Amino acid sequence: MRFLHDTVLNDASNSGTVNSAAVDTSYLEEMSAVVTFSDVAAAGTLKLQASNEQKSPVVWVDIPAATVTVAAGATSLLPRSLLCFMWVRAVWTSTGGAGTFTVNLKASGGGG
Picture 1 (cartoon, rainbow, N blue to C red):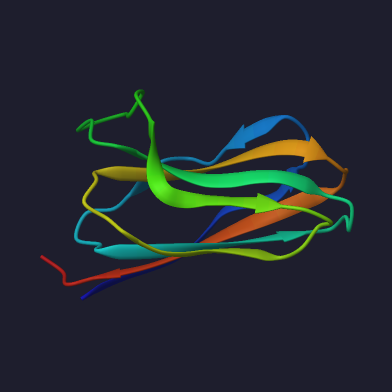
Picture 2: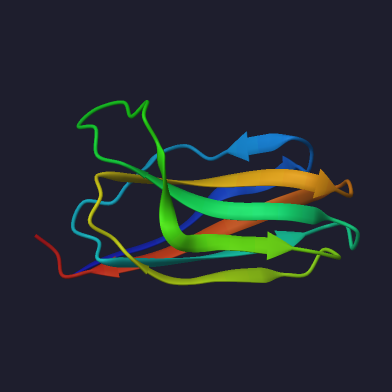
C-alpha cells in the first residue's frame, strides 16, 4: 500500500491564482483535498488538475468533478477522486477576501 498525506499549499496568499507543486501519484488510486482559510471573507475555487507527462509536467487538465467553490472562508472538502494520472496539483483561484490558505491532500493506493 502507498499512502500520502501532504500539505501542498501552506499559508499561501489568497490573491490571484496559486498552483501547488506537482505531486507524483504513482501507485495511488484515490485522493481527497481539504482547504482551510485564515480570513472568513475568503472566496474562490479550488480544483485538482492532472498531467500524464512522464517528467516535469507542463500540460495540466482539470479533473472532472474535482472542483469546489468556496464562500465566506468556509473550510471545504474535495471528496474522493479516482486517480489514474502521473501527476496531480491543486489550483486555487481567489475571487475575494485576503489572508492565507492551506491545502492538504490525502491519497491511498494498492502499491506497486
